[in-house]
Length: 444
Image (cartoon, rainbow, N blue to C red; front, side):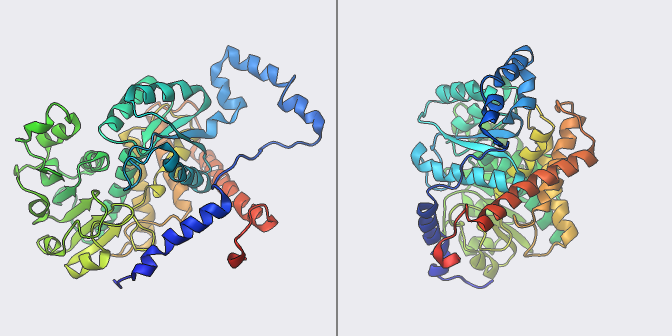
């Protein structure tokens, strides 16, 4: 893999500053109904709309039929853990949440609104999101610090009758597992034999560990490592205040290995790092101690824990990162648009691990059909047909498990999903063509 210059690595950052100022945001609200004349206001607003309100009073589920609630989610954050930047606050989190809304719309045809909340109280955050339920068909939690994020997710999943999901947990896990399935096939290592090191024991890797187990990796063949060292049965410091880590101390690390990152990585087949942005966090000499045909996922943002070319030179067979300018981008954007498209289209009451694993396998099978190799273990966002397959896989689980409120035949659902996604993408192309979305002069 060819080494990139500092200028090449920084180019997306420079472009981002320039274009965000040019467009003054990435999303806006547009109408989906016509205004043929001003007489239409009597239909879309008063007095006509009162009849719609009265119908919903008698059956609140009609809000999914008469309003855009069926296709709308809230992207909620309090800005306490944004990318690799930490607790930067709700205002600074807004560009990320707008970006999320852009991806939801363009890749999944899902309408979403960024809601950055000025609170660091777990109870207040839960209360606010709970009160939003009537306006949305689903909730996407984003960039909330741990351990609060675990409590927020689990509480809202129990309290709300709409799907609630935390992308930093379930989204990262879903896409990472999809990449692992592809990588394991390329190096011909069965999941029940593969030995895994997870560097970083935050929300992402904790959820990844659980989904890997569900996918077929043996818990005893995994070891997690936080800032204090490996998770093992002697880590009594975690028992009271970090129950999610403590649970993994009991079921992973069959050898009860003690030590730090170096010890955790040695003699492993797969390294998944979601820790401190690098480079220099994972050292090349640690990669050299891994098993033959090692797989390295260095996925910290904005920069991976080790540069891909360094990992390759140290003997890694496959390297994945979270960046789009390297091969094998393991990015949540491959997961959440298709998954939410599926649950919204059948009005699922929840998102569970079975749906997440179904999405992982749909992503993997899509790449498998294209032809897996060391630089293609997972599709890219450009392959938009992926999101159709993913939505169908998720919707099918929701239907089979009786979580779907709207039953649809798969052929009908496939056409609907395809039409919704194509409409979203074609609208952007048409708006650019007609000049309603302007291009910077240098791109015209």
